Length: 117
Length: 107
Image (cartoon, rainbow over all chains, first blue to last red; front, side, top):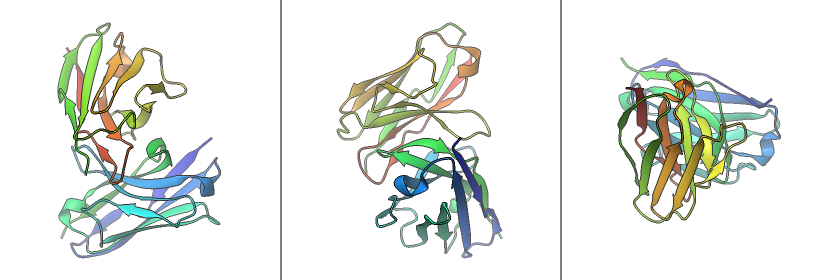
């Protein structure tokens, strides 16, 4: 059974940093591209960042480029999102998702990030 | 960036109704489109990929069609479990983008 378990969310002040993790199990992690998708309270879905299975290629939404960094450790079956210079508008539930041809077949349960003073 | 526009944003329907949701892309994406269902407090669930391929385990009352810039998701006979919000997503190129969502409500 595929499982994706996010962690690392919480309350952070504007300008602060946070690192999200997503522990994967039930599939061959290194062969799948992965992404982070977020959803602000009461709003729609927004793709944030994606990374290839090997970790060689990464992609970002314009709204986070230069502030967020996606990475993965295939030896630990874990996906990461380093978030710096956080803003109020980054407040959202962050989901990790496994990718097949750029659509998302499995999703985690999400972790809430709140940026507020 | 490719913009995805869904309509309507809200839809009121009754159990048994045939429901159609439309998604338009700002440029051609061939058949690189997916549809998701999301219920409150839950993660999205993949329904349809490559515009018309039904994800394993998804009921056959769900179907997708279209190519290029115009796509539809159809629920042939709405069931109580189908009241949710539906999103389209273009899978053609980065940055990946979603439509704004269509909330299907009980009439």
